[in-house]
Image (tube, rainbow, N blue to C red; front, top):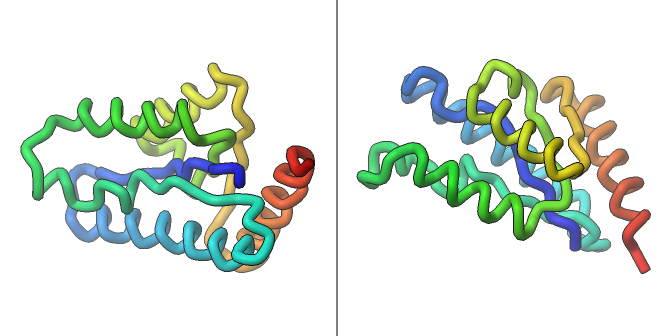
Length: 134
């Protein structure tokens, strides 16, 4: 199984509703990946949004702690990343994309949450993952 990192906005100016919206969007893409690859198990995912959801209010660790945690998982487990819509408006997502580019890891860009765009990404992920299948 190849793991892709889900990269997108999270903090959004610390506005609670926007944060919840960002978590839900990232989670939705993870659900779509899980449902699409449930039989073949070609692709799995890491979603920082859900893995430490709401920790900015539940824990006392600084934001840098979570960046380092995500980086460690991205570096050791993720072979590619999916850039969610509006990723380029997020400092953290831009930082994550730059890290993937520096490591020469594949990046996929989801144009929107419209069904047609999600299907395009899922098909691209499948074609990409097939290259590694032995």
